[in-house]
Amino acid sequence: MKFLNFLHEDQSPHLGAIKDGQLVDLSELGFPTSLDGLLNAGDSLMNVLKADWENMKPTRSLESLRYLPPVLNPSKAIAVGLNYLDHAAESPYKDAPKYPVLFHRFSSSWVGHGTDLVAPKVSPEFDYEGEIAVVIGKAGRHISKEQALDHVFGYSLFNDGSIRDYQFKSHQWMIGKNFDASGSFGPYVVTADELPAGASNLTLRTRLNGQELQKANTNDMIFDVVTLICTCSEIFKLLPGDIIISGTPSGVGFARKPPIFMKPGDHIEVEADGLGVLSNRIVAEV
Figure (spheres, helix red, strand yellow):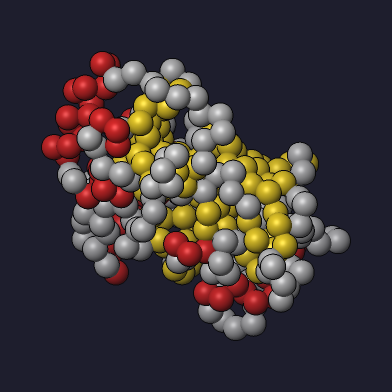
């Protein structure tokens, strides 16, 4: 199944699902107003949805839909740095990490599919990073490798937009990764049963103005989804709706000669097998 959050005509968030290429408004059928609510309700409500799914009829087209991020307020959004060998090699750090490089990304720093990304006025170095996002469906702490994928609800796409000169002002990357509306998330969450286990063997691509600048396979990740879940759960309890943004491959803008950065008027797309296309336009900060 494919779940999404969208803005209803009354300007309130609604939860939807895609069926036969159209939208089922689940909130109008009595389900929560966001995927956050569905995940936090536990298995019982999800089982009700699955039991009724065959009888649910789409009520509107996906065209002109105003997408919201597919998870609105995760308790934690953990991003992973340098998780592809070629990207580690093109970075200032050169060597592949021996332990996952983790940092937090705030929900204020991302927007949904089709919403404008904001190029900050304080920097010309607005970079793209296409990634796979892992959405946690079941809480857990000290999760074993054998049980890790049981905690995954599904997967989505993420553009980990980075303000490079700010990122490298210190050894901590937080400021360069959390400018308002600098990243994007979506367009929807695909449940884990529709994809290979651990989102393995998916081709991930990033295009800027139609030009493909990143292409890799998720099998090339240094730390796979299982390892990332286990590592994060050693540190804190993972909760339903938490997301793990699993890292970007090589081809980012700052490593190119000459560098390529996103600028107002540009159009950026992130795509992966089975996960659709996450698309955003770039605008200048006012």
